[in-house]
Structures are given as structure tokens and as C-alpha cells.
Amino acid sequence: MLINHNEILETVNMLRQEKLDIRTVTLSLNLRDCQDSRPAKLQHNIYSKITNTAKNLIAVVDELESKYGVPIINKRIAVSPISAIAEGCKGKDLRSIAITLDEAADKVGVDFLGGYSALVQKGFTSGDVSLIDSIPDALSVTERVCSSVNVASTKAGINMDAVKKMGGVIKETAEMTRDQDGVGCAKLVVFCNAPEDNPFMAGAYHGIGEAEAAVNIGISGPGVIRSAIENSPGLDFTSLSEIIKKTSFKITRVGELIGREAAKRLGVTMGIIDLSLAPTPTAGDSVALILEKMGLEYCGCHGTTAALALLNEAVKKGGLFATSSTGGLSGSFIPVSEDLGMVKAIKAGALSIDKLEAMTSVCSVGLDMIAVPGDTTAETISAIIADEMSIGMINDKTTATRLIPVPGKKVGEVANFGGLLGGAPIIKLSDHSSKDFIDRGGRIPAPIRSLTN
Image (cartoon, rainbow, N blue to C red):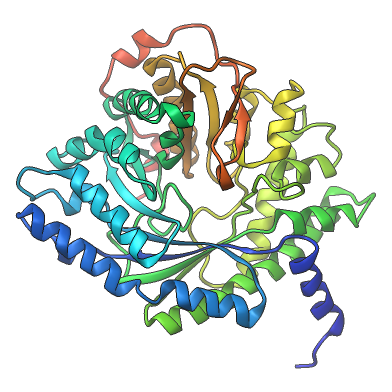
């Protein structure tokens, strides 16, 4: 095949000028063979499995970054849901297990470790209850451990008892990390239809149907997409979609290369390429800015949902042609605190919680990294979760919430979480109560579309 010098120069420009990067290389590990009824033995098994399997992860990723000149921002690990792994452990000292996970992550040098998780879309086991109750403590005493709870699915419906419980867990987690603006909640995701191969935190875990170990890649590149739109003025939406698809194809090919090389060198299965556009607090690295380049004055004004729908679908279509290993969440993220354009739109009064909820019907995740008043009740948080879960359940897609009730802060004040987590103004919520609704409990049944057998 002839080398196209223009394409080479274009890729170099993506790396140097437009902030193209691999957002994460995530090593996904099965811990089922670590199970033991003795707490000390279970913790030993978990620590040994992680540190032995992942001992070369950082070195391999650094070698690939140097070889190909592609920045790889995060190195992460995802493990089997700890609620299941610790189910048969006497005493269920989950705080100690969380600390063990944190120590293992520190030993191998990764940024985050996901999988302090439970899947309760249709009900709880005793292990699930123990894990969920331990989340505030676990996230307050660890630095790298991330947690997720799947409370709904299209097949099972919405476990409203779990939704109610998670409202209280989020409030308690925020209070236990009060000195950091409730940052513990930034490591906690509540899901509907959680994917088993997601490389992104805080929701990554190693699914029961996954291989023994796999490498999952999360690509990024909102700056590249923004630049492509900026350099193509006056196009109609059909032509604009084609530009985004072609650009997404090129971005995904970079992720495919890194993923296959990493899996080969680590001696594990190549998992998936997640096509998501993931913003950062860096200027220009913004999904909101992409939408504004389509002609919106601010992200959040009328037309935003349509613009996001076009972007999300074009990114997916372009990526599908570039790899046969698509998975994870794949699309466009809208984490408010991690996107300077979103923050700007909230400050301008253009972006509200209601508009963000509407946008989640067409983006790849949900209400993500949203700072809310510290005095928000647990029932209101649960009601927001329930609304978001219903969007995922009815539309057979993944939705999630990462809500942060910032202790002591009110609407208009700013929360600061640091690093890639960024910071955000406290957003206004409804003043009216949902308590009686949440107190009903039980399960919202699955929709008719769940009957697909």
C-alpha cells in the first residue's frame, strides 16, 4: 500500500496541535480464583493476583508511548465485582479489602483501580449489601479505588430499593470526604445497563463473561473533532457527519494499534476499543466546544441535544469501520467538571440539570461529574438517579450518574476536585420534594421491549 504523506502529516498534527491521545489503557483482571473464606488469605490472593499480572503494565505502556509518540494519559486496572469475590468471606471485612486493592494499585503504579462494585438490578445478596454499605468508608480511606453499582437494566427494570440506598450512600461519601469538596463521590458511579468491558473510571469492572485478563483501550480526541469541524465551515449536517466519521476512523486506528501491541506484550487478550470522546479541563479539549462549533452560542441552548446526537452517532460509525473490537461505552461523554465548555455554559446560565438530563438520552453515559448543593437530600439524589435509570432502561442503553453533593456549598459556588476531575459550579436542582415517591421502594418493572427472546 502506498504511503500517503498528507495522512502522515495529518496524524502528526493531531498529536502535536489537537491534543490527540489515548485516554486510558486499562488492564481488566478476573479475581474469581482469589476467593477464600479466610479474610487474610482472600486479601493475600487479591494482592498477589493484581501485582503479578500487572507488574509490567506501566513499563509496557511507557514503551508504546515512546515508540509511537502517542500520549497515553492513564494506566488503570479493573477487577471482578468485589461483592461477588468477597461473598463467602467470613466477617466480610470489606474496608480491609478496599485498602488491599489500593495498595496493589499503588504497587504497580496505576492511576485508578475499578471494580469495588455490585450488580443489584434485580435484588441484593448479603455480599451486595455489605459492599454497598461499605462504599463511603472504602472511598474515604483509599486514593485509587473506584466503585460502581448497577441498579437497573432493560431486562430487569429498576431496583428502587437500591436507588434509595444509593442516595444515602452518596450523601455519606460526600460527608466523609468533606475536606476535599466531597471528591469521594467522583469515584462512585450508579449505572443502568453497565457494560462489562468499560475502560473508563469510575465505572470500570471486569465482567463475569470476560476473559481471564484483557486490555481495554479508551481513546479520546475531542480537540481533533473540534478542529475538523472548525476547518470545514458552511457544511450542511450530512457533510458534517461525514467529516466527523472520517476523523473518528483515524483516531480509532491509533487506539487499535496501541491496544493490540499492549495485549501482545502483556500476554493477555485484546479486549475492546472504546470510541468515547472524553474531555479534560484543558482548554480546547471539550465536547461542549465541539457542539458550539456546529453553530450553538452556548452548549445547553436549544439545538444542543440534536447536535450531540449527530456527534455521538458519527463518532460511533467512524469507529466501527476502524476496529472490529468496539465496546465499552463508545460515544461522547459529558462530564461537567471535566469539560471547561460545560462549566462556562453553566456559569452563563445556558446549561441546566434538565438540559443535561435530556442530553443523556443521546450521549454515551449520563449525568456525569455534576456538583450539586451540599444540603441536597438523599431522596432528591435518589430521584435524579431514578430519572436517569429510566432513560437507560426504556432506551436499552447505558446511562449513569456521578453526582457530588458538595458539603457546605450552595448554588453558584465552585467545587474543586483537582487534576483530570477539574471543578464545577454548583448547579441548581428542583426545590420540590420527591421523598414520598422514593419511599415507595420495590421495583419499576422492565419495559415491554425487554421481551426479546
